[in-house]
Length: 222
Ligand SMILES: [Zn+2]
Image (cartoon, rainbow, N blue to C red; front, side, top):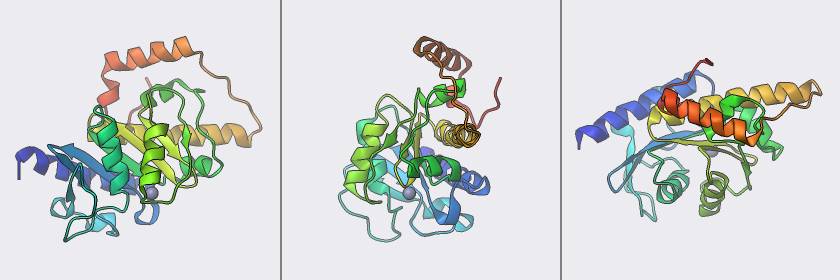
């Protein structure tokens, strides 16, 4: 195994542990993957995150049509494969059922550009059409929802976030949950958020690129 893949496997374990500890992966839900030459490596199905080690991370070819023998990959491996195929900019994917964002997704609501931190996702976050978990239909729906973005909600399901590193995908997933909590608080208070203008959003996206924040870890606001 290449040193790069070994490093990515260790990073997947660390990312999954951090997301689980933060409460973003309730009841073994969610999954984490990273691109490797010719395919990707992904968290296995049905294993408590506390028991996850780098050796238990599962490797899959990008064009896989069925699960490999041995340890089963996450049930959402088709979702990850479809995103890596459609998005050359995705080097890592984090999928969660994080509570606040999933609440919005269960109402079929995306997250509008009400706070500048949504620039981490590349703009307004869509809620992708519902399809059964683990299916190619869900994978296609997620790819459509992610068009031009680094995050999408999945209706009646959860969140998918991508990045050009595991740190970046982790950071986007973390911020989606934060924004969802803020948006739900506004809605709960009966308040209608003010939205950023498109040109202002573009300016913030440019500033984030300058700061290198699109590759950063879960971030504090400046
Ligand atoms: Zn899921």
